[in-house]
Length: 604
Image 1 (cartoon, helix red, strand yellow):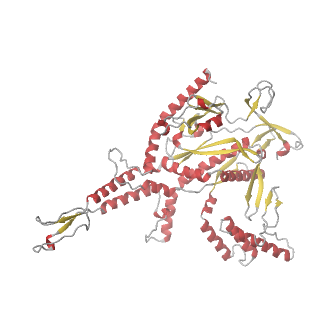
Image 2 (cartoon, helix red, strand yellow):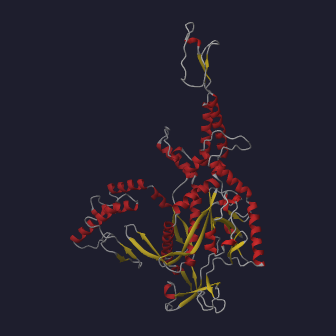
Image 3 (cartoon, helix red, strand yellow):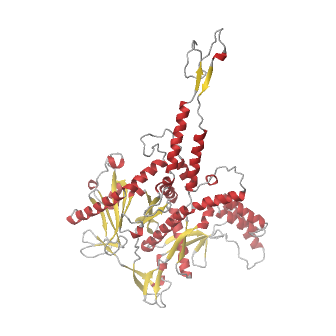
């Protein structure tokens, strides 16, 4: 329903949006130049002429850096205790499972190119309560959006310092109707200038996150002149309440439309809280819901740039070399097109000349000989042009920090192996800052995901993981495990004091063939034990299974069954048996269950 108050709020936010977008016009122009350069534009700066030939070194050098590696999460408690350490491992496994459930491979592929081309990428993380997975309600949705569709507060270069920011989404009208519950006729259509086509099925949604007078994160969204949402305290828990009888949950006999009302506290059985005071296990604690306080936006930079929200694009670094190479390649092409073999014939020759090669036969008269005919080769020397183009290409590679070895090219240099490895390490070291920026962004994503589950995951989330012996453990993430009791104030609170980073050691797992070879060397050298022992062979194949060696699982099951058979026929000992027992599940010390696959039977 349109009211004067709503119209004024819409006018205010739209004016703020237009002003912020205008301040970013130079940045968006630079984004456009970088994108055109990446796709091989033939434009020459400060010239109306176009390059007739383009050698796209920008695309080559950027694609050489694109990595499919997704950093593994690592969580550690800010204050150590055994309970906090267990919680940290639980949060870590939660984040790993969320990564597996979401299409992070696709998101990473988009993120990599946005980062190198435009200088950074923008991640938007939201909690969607409509997601259902078994008995679990709600889940996380993550979007890697085009930096052109993110409009920050002007002159503020950290998301945490912003008072407001905007995001623009081109979506379908059906999605807007379903998500926000508005009438179809109220949603304006996108014009042809906005999307290139006149489509009645598309619409543009503008979302603003801002801090209200109480410093709470709030949201205002609109489409055209229609307000889609206006939420004070965006992260607050809300329940439908009847405005007449006050019944909660949206169920009553008043036939009145319920309104969303903030739910401030929750009742938690003290028996679920590990640090509850003695004798309080039978009681119930009233404590506030955990409420995040951040904007759900993460910026990944390519390389840092002073007074800039985004980083510097690789396109900007090597634009000069790309432009010069395009000019030289165009000059080479012009020379080659004008070159050729020019024939020399007598003035009274009776032959017709044309541009066909071997398309005619010359017949000499009795008074003529072949020496009277000849050719002049007008092919120009382009060796210096090629040399200069290659020189500019090498400059661009050095600027970005890429070597031939990094690109996988054969290096026939006579430099010693140690010296060559040192050069490779130095080149890789120059790319470490970009990798650190990626790791930092993923750590921030993990912090937001963890905070969402701490705030909204009412049902414990089922998790599983595989230990070093190949045993599969079942456990759960319960946000009540993070409730702490303060004996000084006598109050309960959610402990979010955990540090988020990435496990850099997991990146080695991407080099599977290298790990396979190292595992084999360890077996042969006796590092894993006696190479002829069944237990050692089992350990070897467990290592290979963790490194995803083909059909390693079959060998693990074979040697597990063989070891179990050897143990049952030998005398009992205190030595623990292998992990792969013929059982469905057994309890572990921490109270969780572990699933252990039974050995395969003959013929299976």
